[in-house]
Image (cartoon, rainbow, N blue to C red; front, side, top):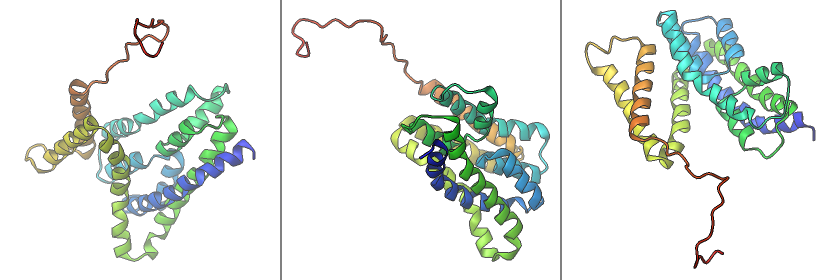
Length: 245
């Protein structure tokens, strides 16, 4: 099997999941923008949470700087993923790397970084192709077909984004107490923004930015990652009586 076909096979489950989530995005987006605009956004971004937040802010009439900073903060993780993945891929032209970087998402990164298969350009393009098609196609169906669906069904689709967020954070929160506490802190700050007079009028984008930055700073201060001080180049000499000698 060629690298491209192997990558496509690995991307099938991702494509199916993306179709469902982007369908709900398309339904939500047409409450404030045209179906064509929603489709163009999905085709040029391929970022679930970033698109949801960006379109919500557009509908609410947020400022350009608020939209820019919010989407930058939400999508910053993709840069870290691309840097990490670049250590595993074979040498290839910069233009090819940029195309691959465009298609990096949480799920595509997770599959590629854990796959024992050699990461070639054909493999990555195969892995990215179906998920991107699924993401755009789901948006098209949701945006252009929303007027044909039952209103109760459309309302229920609004929980898709929250379900996706829960699916992302719960596994890590269960394995790591610091991550769990940082999530609780961010949730508490967001709740305060919603109920406390005087600050609940702050724009949605700035609420996201402030809650994320404060929670991250608290996490960095109280739950720092311990550095590995062991030097692999230093020879460790066995002590007398060591059973492993």
